[in-house]
Image 1 (cartoon, one colour):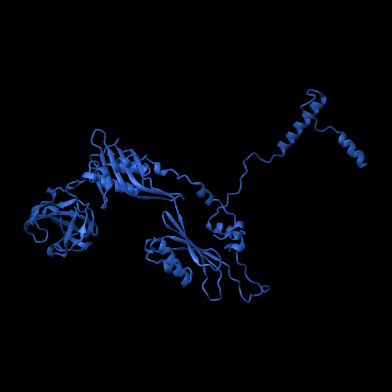
Image 2 (cartoon, one colour):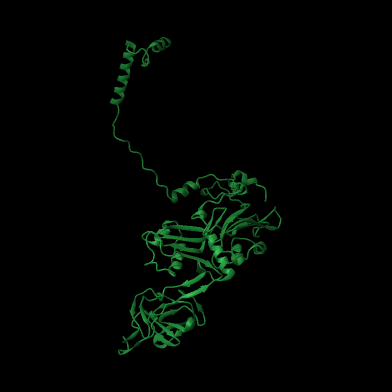
Length: 489
C-alpha cells in the first residue's frame, strides 16, 4: 500500500514548469497553484510593520576586561589572562608553587630618578645593575637619559631561593637615533651591549601659506605646530608691527628644525627661518645664526625694533610728570610710568641688561634695577616677588619679577622708571635698537646657508621616510608559537 501510494504521489504533477507549454491546460493549472500558494502566504502574513531588533550591547572597559579574562593565551609565555577560581575541598595545596621561568616588564625612568635606582626597583640584582650601568655609560652618558624613557626588561629564573632573578635582557630608546639592547648570548654568559643605529632624516619642515583673517589661525590651519607658530610670531614681531603691517593676502613662510626616524617617530625643533612676503613692501627674511641663536636679516644685519616694550601687558594708568601723590597728598614729580596689572603678573625686562640691584628700596618696595647700554638704567618697583639676583645678565622679555603692592602703593601695579646717566627721563620717549652686523667670510656662509634653506620644498619633511629592505625585514610579524624557539641573538 505504501509503494502504491508513493507511486501515485510521484505521478501527480503538482508544480509544473511555468516556463514551458505556455497557454496549455497544464500551464494554467500550474499558474493557479502558484497564485493560490501566494495568496495563502499573504493571508498568513502577521503584519507589514518593521521588525524591531534588540539594541546593540554597550561594550565598555569592564565588559572588555571580562571578555579578555576568558581568552586563551599561551600559558608557557606567562599569560596574564584567565579568572582565578575559588578553591574547593577537592583542591590539594601544593608544597611549593613553581615560579615563572621569566618575567617581562616595562619600567619608566621618572623625573629626578637615577638609572640604577630604577633597575633596582624593577628587581635587578646589584651585580647586574652595575654591569648594565657601565655598559650603557660607555654608549651614552647616563645623565642624558630623559625622564619618561621606557625600558623593556626580562628577568630569568632564580639560581637559588631568595636570590634575585638574573637579568636576561633590557632594551630601550636611548636617543632619537639610537636604541640600546643589553642581553646575554646564552645562559650563563656575561651581559653585552648591542647598539642599533636608527636612520634619521634631518630635512627641516617648511610651512608656507596665505594670511587670512588671523596670521596665527592661518599658520595653524596650514598644519604648523602651536609652539612653532608662537616662535614665528615672536620673532616676526621684533621686526614688523603685526597689527598694522600684516594684511590679508600676505604670504607667511617659516622653517623649523624637524627630524623623522625610520621607525616612524617625528620630532620638531626650534624655529630656523621666519619670512613674510607683503607684496609691494620689502619682504622679511630672518634666519637663526650663530652660537647665541639670534635672528639676522637676509643682508646679515641682526636688529630688534619696536620702541618701548611694555614691562607688563596692562594699560598705562599714570604718566611721567608732576602729579598729586595718592598717599602723601601733595604734588610731586612722578619720575616714571605706572602700569595697571593684576597681583602676581610677570614683569619682563624691556631690553638686554645686567641686574644692578634686587631687593627692598624704600617707597619703591621690592624693586629691581637694570643697567643697559648707552648709559640707560631702568627700575621696576612694588614687586610682590623678585625673580633675578644682583649681577645676573638678563635678556629682553625675560621675567625679572611679579606685580605686587609693596612700598608706598595703593594697590597692585608696576611703577617703571628710566634713567640716562643717572637722571630720570620719560620712558615713553626712548626707542631701543639692538644691532649686530655680519661681515667677511661669516656673512658669505650666512648667505649660502640662507639660499640653501630656501630651496626646501614646503611640506617635504612630512612625507613618510622610505624604508630599506633591512628595515622591512625587521618589522616582519612573529607568531606566538615561533617565540618559544627563537634562537638567541
